[in-house]
Image (cartoon, one colour):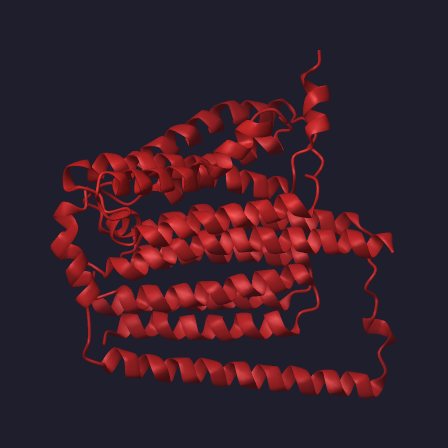
Length: 95
Length: 325
């Protein structure tokens, strides 16, 4: 196991924990969405660190494809969450 | 470059990434946290490039930092326009505050425990023997995939089902956004400087999207990066206050949104009709079929992302009145 891999994988774990904490504790919906995005980035970092196999070998393409899919799904989920939050705030203001 | 200086680089990069994430999550000012999040996304792209994942780096820079940032900034704008209603903080009593602190500490400790557990699980996973079997399978079959970029081969050939369903997720998300309400009001028309910039920027972005789509077959790039770049062109046009550009109207928009899933299904069903497995491309045709699906996917992804930025169902009345002289 490479040092580089460990450094990035551990940072991924820290990002997941940071994101989860804020997603649970924040009051603002927008910042909760942002926190879940940070958590997702942590998961991506774990996957990319697992795929890395040193500077001379080419990395594993399967986790890379998973992360690419993940980034696109994350942005569409973010957009839907933000639209839900917008609708929610208009409903609340109408009351 | 020697290993010691690379480790110093890694350390500095990761410290910056984690502190930016911390700063983005710690502040209560929404706009500030979104801007910090965009900087976080750009540094992540550097990290992916460092770990030899250029395809992911391109997608992160375009989507993770760029488009998510644009979506979140547009959402903070909605937020700041509305009167602040949640003023519950000031009315909380002393015992309430103590309970709040207890919850905060419990959640923090549990999250820290989760990070430790994850690291422990990783140490276990890295030590296990089954390694690289998928990577070896990919490189063994790369010459029959129709493309030479292994990531594109995985996305559009070996795991084409995943990508088909991913496009279906995008379509579902945009239908959800349309169902939730009308689009945001248009931006006001841009001044001469931004308008001039648009004239330069939009053609360059469209050209770059085409290049990324084409180059994805044998080098980093592909439908997602190209779609995101094309969406950036659309968003620039919307920001410049051009209602009629950047996104087709009416039924053309609906068709464009569905064309990614549609083309994928069409190719799959056509292959079934000639006696091949669903999305099991014949080797001679694989390259052209992948390019066909990717072109359709690029259009659908771009239309989806611009629709998400617009934030709701496009208003047909506004379009009709706009078209009248």
